[in-house]
Image (tube, rainbow, N blue to C red; front, side, top):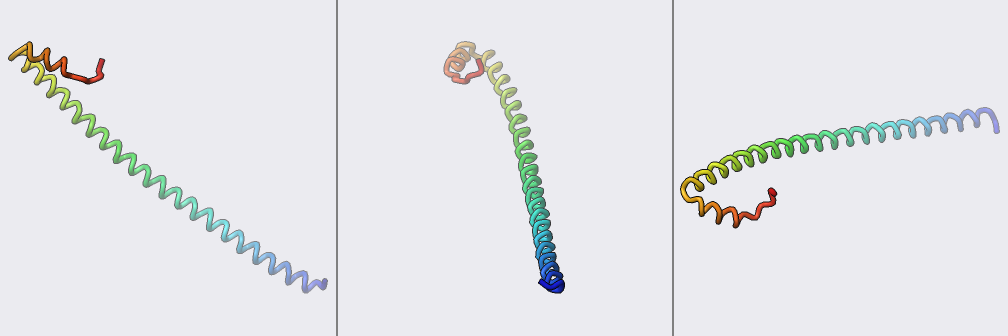
Length: 94
């Protein structure tokens, strides 16, 4: 092989290697970008769900307070009726 052929082959090989390096870096950058966007979307979803959960907890607290008040009123009106209501209650709070 003549030196000019070797230099020509080396030039071609270096161009292919450079193109491969650029493609690899581009793929790596795009992959990181996609993962970052996915992580941001999941964080936004988690934040929305956390807000919904807080709202549900607040509503449940209000309902429990209202139920306690209603039981208090019912007890003051007719204690035997409260016994019937508690027997019919199938909650698992015990």
